[in-house]
Figure 1 (cartoon, one colour):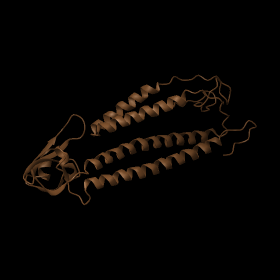
Figure 2 (cartoon, helix red, strand yellow; figure 1 turned 90 degrees about the horizontal axis):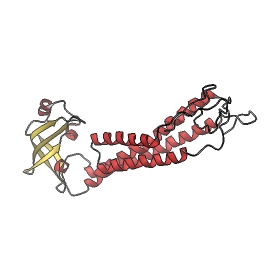
Figure 3 (spheres, helix red, strand yellow; figure 1 turned 90 degrees about the vertical axis):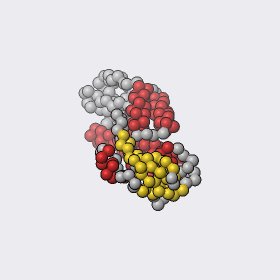
Figure 4 (cartoon, helix red, strand yellow; figure 1 turned 135 degrees about the vertical axis):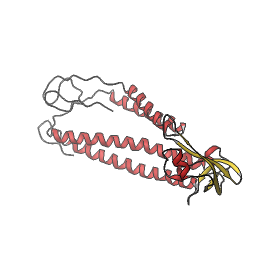
Length: 266
């Protein structure tokens, strides 16, 4: 994100200033040092990667997310490095200009957040959608033993061993409980041995992914709907935030004076 600084004499926003002096009062402009955009990008990649690893996102999503950050940084640095050809005009309404600038910054942050996190949500649903497109059968999971495992990072794992149609299987219990118990004793009380849980069995998958809690909508269809909802709501959010940014930019232009002192019209 671009740094914002002001003239120490008149307080004019100098973010876009390309001249050596303030266009409002003529004071000399001292450009503050900027962090290297690639260093910032690496920090963003490190933070997002740690977040996605903690919450168990697929590795392909982590790679794509990092590529998006790099692409955005490259695009930003290309245009940020271009010198301004026209010096900003004097601001006739400094207070309104600051409010609109803050609104534009918040709108831009919302646009990027919706784009990145909407993409992550879509990819997660899309991955699970195609993961559970294979054949399945409805059955019951007979609980033999439950396990509560605490890790140094992330949430505790809550799962069970048991049988489905006489064969040993493993199952993640969080979708069944809809919450994570606080300890092993609480888990034992909630899911005692012998509990029967209606499930879907996916014989072509491995591990705990083979057994999914029964719901009225099968996993593939449920995740397909989630993926489509992520696209629809994401596009609506992007369109709304882009529209707000456009309106605020147009309004902020009215804060600049013409060379003859008249107020610009949008």
